[in-house]
Amino acid sequence: MNARHLGSGLLLLLAAAAAQAQKAPTELRGASDHPLVSRYAGAVLQDAAQEGFAAVAVPASPRGPDQAAAVEGRVNAYFYIAPKERSALEVFRNYQAALAQAGFTTLYTCEMAACDKAGIKDRFASSVVAPRKWQAKGIPPAGSIDRDVRFASARLSRNGQDSYVLLFVAEPNSIWGAPAVVQLVVEPAAMEGGKVVVNTDALRKALGAEGRIALYGIYFDTGKSVLKPESRPQLAEMAKLLQAQPALKVHIVGHTDNQGTVAGNLALSQQRADAIVGALVQEHHIDAKRLSARGLASFAPVASNGSEAGRARNRRVELVEQ
Image (cartoon, rainbow, N blue to C red; front, side):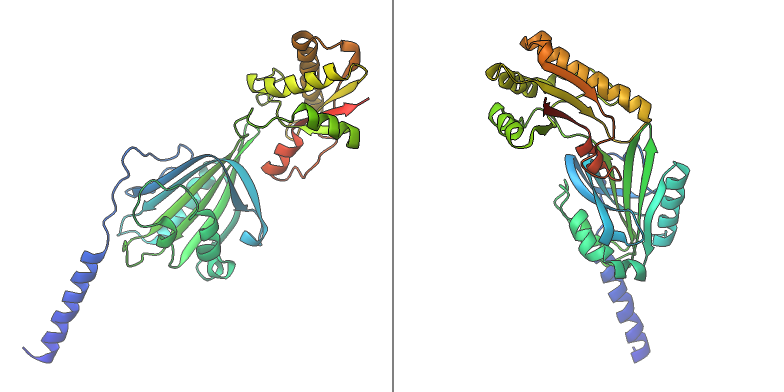
């Protein structure tokens, strides 16, 4: 065998060895796509993660990750391996078209060198992909988007609620030999209530020092003014304070974020304040003459309404000394 044939044979052997070394993706048992954004046709769901309440930085301006807003709520993460015969560019363009067709608005996007400059595949992937609670114990998804990457963040606003998608599509690497996709869906939501209550002593000290205190332990469904059961512990502490100080009179002030109309929010915040007063009077036997209900809608924010985290802070009830 001459040198030419020997060299050709060696190359074929190396190529075969590389192909064998590549890992075959395996569908994660019991997992499924998110209803808002499905997988690329023919892709394999290699891993997934679900968190009931977490914070994810969402790039929402031309500055990308350097000016990302933290969004808190349900986080679902998906790691797909696309078909080998499809290019990463084709996969990414399909996702972009699907998001636009579904009504998403692109907040930030970059490709290849621009993503490298923005730190998307390194520090940003490390902060938003690596910390997820991935179910499979195999290759970490963050380690599979270590090649040239394309990225997009997008928002869907529907019925007064926002949902966000973060999408990474990476060129094939030596592990998979196919485009790798990491997709995060973030749905802002209030955390499970009734876990932290401002007790009577803290209420008394705040009123004595500031004349007011913001309460986040009183819960209503979106757009509703019926108190949820999780509100009972906080209402009980408010009642204890009023019972311990018979001369104390307070305003119950309802606040909303800026979603919806001003007129609607004024009415809603007033109805919620009235509901709290009603509960204190009817369930805890506080004299109604000591209570005043006021609704201020979004006229007294304590944070910017430009992010879900800010809006969550603005949706509150305040106890104000008369």
